[in-house]
Length: 474
Ligand SMILES: Cc1cc2nc3c(=O)[nH]c(=O)nc-3n(C[C@H](O)[C@H](O)[C@H](O)COP(=O)(O)OP(=O)(O)OC[C@H]3O[C@@H](n4cnc5c(N)ncnc54)[C@H](O)[C@@H]3O)c2cc1C
Image (cartoon, rainbow, N blue to C red; front, side, top):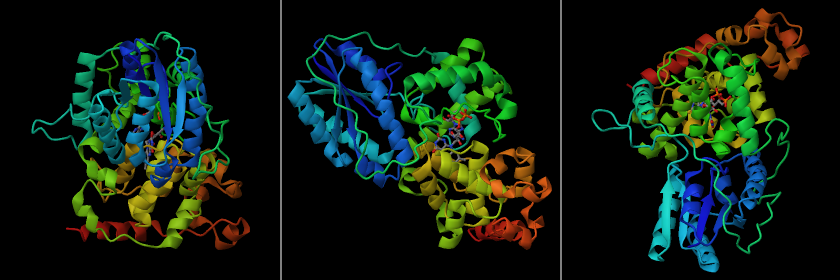
């Protein structure tokens, strides 16, 4: 039997259940396939940096697969609607009788996959999908009422119990397969619908090997201090693994296994650096479960339906100032500029900036979600949507609407020496720290001299406006 592994956001050979199964079932060679669906990606708002990162990762993947005698075919398939017929043609051409892939949970991907399964099965081709993006399959953890968890802590407790009881180590890379006479396709350098500029390969080398190096470095050097360092944007205290997890250069199981090696009791620990990091991996799982079980969040709708009637501001001018990092609040501007310049933003800043847009500017969270997605190298619908809806108080376990971060106190608490702010807002160099944290203390003349904008809104007034807008919902 000849089999086919269809790679999507699981671009690695180790701990890849679909690849493992394709190799196990094959007696006559394994073929790998990757589909470039750039028109669809563009429609989803995926960023050029992320697409370039994936393409770079494919080079390493193709090389690793070749060493196992598995040729990687790359086909263009603009839209998801063309995927079932494209795969069917490939199976016919290469006499494939089994197709394997790892599950995706976004609504368009789910529709695509069910059509693929239907088409292949109708044509007597075996087709199987696997849980890979998360450790626990969405739907497995439910409340006592058999409904999805909408609060993180009980979800986490249930996740920890389940994973501890059923833990299995990551899968190894497959052995070399029987040779087939098929040459791997070249990896494209360009992609229709996308222009690649300033992709920052220096910051984000792609591939499975780099992901493993980062994980090792994090667990060895940073995990123990994670709890104290993770909220300080000027300190590289987090793993910087999100783009690698989002592309599937590394699996969440590999991340947890690496912690387990050092911390055998990781599932029982509380308040240590590694346990706090594990918590973040569980947040990632939580939002993926929400995406699968509450599909409306995939369709631009809030988790909390009553917030659909919120009267958002439609100020394009305010939105653009926020997008460009010109709000006059240095911590927000530095965050937004980090995103534009590097394709990534520190978690604490994502929360500050998202809350600023949705509460201080009262702009719809969907605008922020879209903007982040179009720039992030780690853009992931579940985590991005979860983070935005948390910040906007429209989501699961969301911040209560009246708890609105004060940008000045966030700034002095998490960037006391303004080291991070000055990296991205160098025009503020030399100002007293108090003024950087409290920009209302900077005179208009000083702002003009430095070409830095006046504050877009006053914190107190903006806070009152946001609270009123939420109260009006009742
Ligand atoms: C408004 C907003 C938007 C976000 N958008 C995304 C996104 O598109 N893609 C994305 O991967 N993360 C997103 N996050 C979550 C988080 O900010 C990033 O995962 C984190 O900053 C990545 O840095 P790291 O890899 O160094 O994380 P670490 O602190 O090292 O955490 C380890 C891993 O856990 C996961 N993780 C950490 N925090 C969260 C979280 N709050 N929710 C879900 N998963 C988490 C990530 O996969 C991360 O790589 C968003 C958060 C907010 C508030």
